[in-house]
Structures are given as C-alpha cells and as structure tokens.
Amino acid sequence: MNLLELPSEILAQTFVNLRYFDLLSILATCRTLYTFSEDQVIWREVFLREFDDPRVRIRSLTETPRKLFYARHGDFDWFIEFRKRIIALSCLRNADTARRSCHGDKYEAVVETLLDIIDTADASPAVGNEGTGRSRNISLLPTNSLFSEYSDSLIRGTLVPKIAIFDKDESDSQQMASTIGQYRAGSWQWDPSPGRPMTRSRAALEAEKFRKSENSSRLHVLRGITAYEEEDEKDAGRSRRICYDWTLTNERNEYGPWKDDGSGKTDWRRIEAIASVVTRQFIQTVKDRVSLPQGFAYSLPNRVSIDPSVPDDWAGIQRRWVGTYVFMHWEDLVEFNESRGTSIRSSLEYTPEACGGLMKLDLKLNMDLKDDPTLNTMLPVCFDFPPLYFSGLSRSEEWQMATAIRGMCCLAPGGREVRWRYIVHYGGSDQWQLEGVQPGGVRSGCVYGTWTSVLHEDDGPVGPFIYAPEELCKLKCNHILAHNDGILKFCAV
Image (cartoon, rainbow, N blue to C red):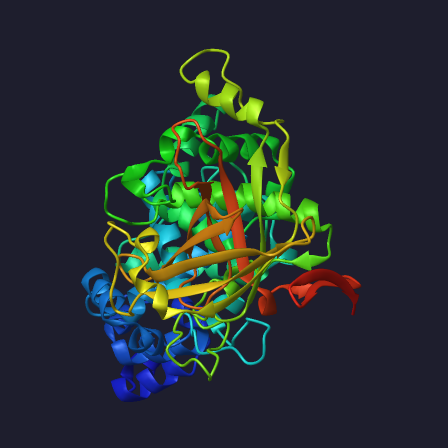
C-alpha cells in the first residue's frame, strides 16, 4: 500500500504531527495531497503549534476593535493565514524570499501580515514588570541582537523590499516550501537588484512611496527606534521636518498627532517622526541610565497591572511615569517654518535640539475634573471604556520645584490606541498642552505626542514628548529620581 492509498483520516493525523516545513514540502511535490491545504482542522493544529491562538486575543478585545477585526478578516482561514505569516517572517530574515516582486501592494501585504502577528499576539497580563508576557508571536519577531540592516530598512520602510505573496494554488506550496529552509537558516543578506537594476533614483522614489504607508509607519512605531536608525542623520532630518512643522499642528487636530480631517484617528506618519526624534534625544540625555520600554513586546496591552485600590482605572493612570520633551532653538524653528516653499529651507539634518531632562510624573485618578472645559474634546473618541481624568505633579532633574499637571485619557476611534491629554500649570496659570497617543493600546508601553502652548499661537513653540510607566523602564545607573515632601532629590540605589 502506498501513501495515497491510506485512509484520509490517517493521512490527516500523520500530517498534523509533521513539522510544518516538512508538510509544506510534501504538499509542494504532490498535486493529490495538495487538497489537504483546504483541511482547516489540519492547518489549525499546525498554526497553533507555531503561533498564539488568535481567538484568545480577539475575545479580549472590546466591542469596537472586535467588530473591525471580523470585518477585515471574515472567517479565519488557518492555511492562508499560516502561509502569509511564514512568508512575512521570512522576508524579515532573508532577501531571497523577497526576490519575486517589488510592487508596492506586495510590500504592503507583508507589513499588514506582520501587524496581524502583533495584533493577535497573546496579550495576557505580564507576570512581574518585565512587560514581555508569554507570546509566541512576539518571540518570532527579531530582537535588537537579530536585526540586520535589511530587516531594519524593511521595518522603517526606507528600502524597497522585493516580496511576493502568492495565490492559493499548487505553485504557492512550491514557492512557500522554497522559503522555509531560508527562514529557518536565518540568512540576513539583501540584494536590491534581482532582474531589474535598482538605481538610486528608482530606490528613492519607491522608498518615498512606502514611507507614506500608514501600516509601515505603525509597524515602525511598534518596533521602536533601531540601532541603524540612531546613526542615520537623513532620517533624523525627515523626522524633524514633520515634528516642527507649524502647519501640521492646528485646531482641526486639536494640536495633537491626529489626522487633519476631524476624524480623531492617529496620524501614524507623525507619530513615527515624533517617536524617532524624542527617542534619540532621550537616549542621549539619560546616557544609559534608563532604558525606554521599546520593542514589540511592549507594544501589547496589559504590560502593567491595574492598581487594585482603583479598579476603575482601566488605563493604568495611577502610577509613576518617566519621560522627557524635546525642542528646537527658537531661531531655528522660526527660520525653518518661514522658509517653507523656498530653495533655502533647511533640511534639519544637523540642526541641534535640546531636551527637557529626565521628567517624572506622579498621577492619580481624579474624576472631579470631568467638567473641566480644557479637557473636553470635539474629536470623535471610542466609548468602549469611559474617559478618565487625572491630576498629579511633574518634576525634573533641572527644576527642584514640582509643577501641577492634570489631564484626561480615552480610547481613540477604533478602540485600539489610547489618547492622552495633559495640561501643565505653573506660575498661576495653564502653560502647556500635551496631546499624545499610546500606540500599543491599554496599559502598554510609551505615550508619544506633541506639546504646544495653551495659547496656540500661529508661530508658537512646538515639539515632541514621551512618557512611559516607570516600572517598564529599566534603571541602569546608581541614581534614580525620587522625592520627599515634593522636593526632588537623587538617591543612591
């Protein structure tokens, strides 16, 4: 009796126990056996051996993002989703997988798949304060030590990858099987010119197109700044030109990193620029004393726990936060904005910036502020969770006196990200308004955003800021911020 004469039930059980790359190789060599690609039971078992069960994450979502997930995916096809994920992960590790095509929609399909891996990762509350959880999905994505210049460029959308997503037919299995060994071998070489030469002008045009992709920007934000990016002055200039552009911060987006159309949705291109600028400055300022919670593991919900004494605090407000704000010297800011549209406008690639030092916020829930008009928003929000209000104190290394801060947070439209507003009060009046977004969702890692004067002058100061839960920031030095009776001091650990 040959293999094909076995009862289908026995064949199915045999396939379930094969390693997935062996199974793909078998299906690629036999047209008859390829029909098993339609068997959802087999591929569900194969999928769940390698990835988190997406049903667990979906059940944990609130109503709005759950509906959006089903509207996009419909019935979850285990074979198709497994196929897409293996190819997408291969593209992060191996250039040969990306030789099939250079079309933008193919690149976008891979980015969407990588985001699906993150968005369906197990986001169960993390044990302790490491923020890593226990997600298989996240463990499959490259860490800092595994990043190559190629995978870095794919994440940042600054190099045109040649990636193929194949149709569901026999040739698909053959092409998939050829990528499996490359994926497991972890080759990290990148050849930008198979077939058609990748000229400098063509690369620039294609890179600019991909850089405008919202999904590409979102993937970059969730990953965080990379080692290659820290040394890229051209990238720094691009990010600064977005962060300090007066025309992008206006009443229509309530002076925050939201789209300029009144939708209240996150402007991922701006958040990408903000995260890049402020993270660079934070790293330079703290000089390895504190590490920000960046990386895919911190871009999941539930990285910090809820204080049991305030069970209504779904956002995890009531805790200590650390961060900083960044600004450009006034003369450079004015010159950049007033030279708009001229040939002499600065690229800002080597323009110096300053940082507000290491800041600390101590926040508490304060629902008495719900009628504060400065905390109202006219932009759409998601009400799957009720808006929360808070107050507290802000301190820094530079200034010994604490300043008062109050604010609100709510879910952004779609229910995936968390929107934050802070009002800084000192000298007897409100001074600064900070508008930010928490890209990883409820109780995740960093909050990125834009600060402006509460007066919102047309030519007023503007810049990026960052805050993160202190418990997710790794302390690397002999001194940390502490306070006693409202006075800042430095205490030996």
